[in-house]
Image (tube, rainbow, N blue to C red; front, side, top):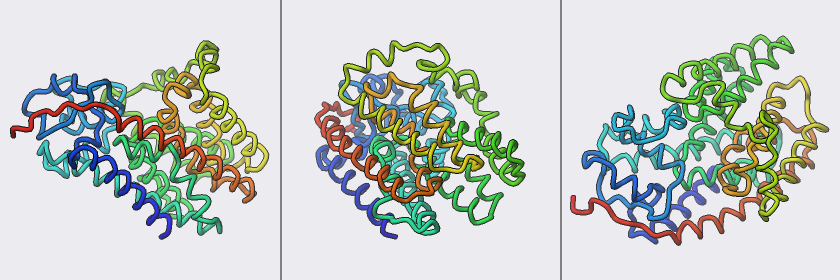
Length: 362
């Protein structure tokens, strides 16, 4: 339970730190632009909502999905509209009451962080790994950022890790259901399960075929909700691969984050190639995710390092469980722990932003 306690402490300290700067207004945790709030009808505005004067974050779309689940007011972009699980669950637990949604939304994400930590620690104990050191692979920059900015990754990761635990425990159907739910939380996770399914077919692992196949099924329906189609999902990361366009890479050379980011990925991939089982579906899932999404989306690496870190979360949390050599795993855990230091500066910059208060007369 040590990792659960550490996770709870970090999440609560971060929350108190933010709220204490904004009169304990829970809407300060949501990075919603003032421009967006001005466009909202009164019925969706909520009470005493804070809006950023200078921009927003992905969490804005998810918050808008929570207050308007079926997008009847055309509030959010279609690329995010397939990530329905967290917003819809937040709305359902709040019984549709707008000013309750920030509370239910936050509590779901906090609970997901703790559940993910619980199952991550169980998996580490099964492999006889240290929760103090390898915990950095769970509490990585991307997941902490996602929690801070109210994104969908904490819930998706909790479902992924718990699914991995039940797969290891032989409870295949429960594992498959959890994998499927993780795709409803974060549609790009379908890449993991599609790769796992293909490898299972090649290696003739029938149970894994079923588990990963069920994990892919929800994605077949997500484009009907306005989500990314298969072609859209592939083209999201086209900069370095589909078009062989190196302009993104060239522009990144001017960034201080470019070299350490790329070196970290290459170092990780190098050790995965040396020290893992080629017939393990999870090994292929991590490798494809790191290469396709980590190196295939170069424009995000320097313009928004926390954004690309969120994309890589599922690969990073699975790394300890596919490596055989513990010393290599410790090195990787230390590297990803060092990346967390970037979060401090990022949060400080975010705290300095200017807010505008809406609808405090209610």
